Image 1 (cartoon, rainbow, N blue to C red):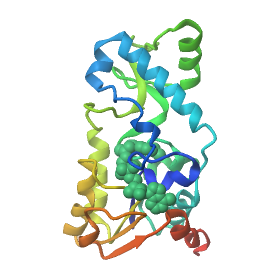
Image 2: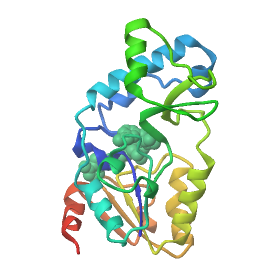
Image 3: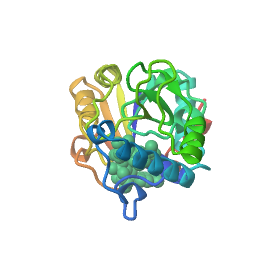
Image 4: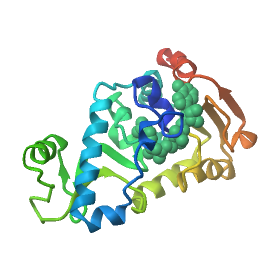
Length: 232
Ligand code: NAD
């Protein structure tokens, strides 16, 4: 089994999804990667928004869905979790980080765009809020950015390749809480089907892939996955 998760798995944890009504993610026009790189003003605005959003979800902790998937992986029944999420809740649920393939990065830390060095958000935030200072890498002087993938920023090729291999070679591809409209991630269910896997979906509303799925569970994700918390 391979799971593919979207924002819907984290809504019961207090992190709203992207497209449901009233989404805080839609409040502002996104700052594309090119604009972030081009101006200090854009970078300052991106960090201001980032810290404001972090405060809204500071108390989020893994839900039933995250914990159920961690259990399946731990039991050896699930190979990996490919996720579009950036909230780090799969790792927080105890899932081995090596088994989480993050297609859109991770918002719980930052990285240097030049050398890839990891930077912690607490230090960046302190410098930003006390001195309006924008982070630069201590090692190479490169621009530091939240480790998420922005609009217009290339997705890490190695992550996408791993996700494609997992999808193409599994027996069951389980899509959980994604509207499946973001590309290229949304091509993964097709790859899984072409590779001979069965496709199962758990989502509160229809998606464009329901017609090719072998099983569609239309309901609440936490409730659907909770029984797996006790699977032996
Ligand atoms: P989406 O918002 O487009 O779709 C989420 C789907 O989950 C919707 O169809 C919604 O009806 C369903 N859903 C929500 N809560 C549910 C529940 N409790 N039970 C059943 N269904 C539920 O999300 P997406 O497809 O993941 O795309 C959003 C993009 O935005 C991703 O690329 C992701 O990186 C980013 N994002 C991430 C987070 C996060 O990390 N938690 C949150 C918002 C957005």
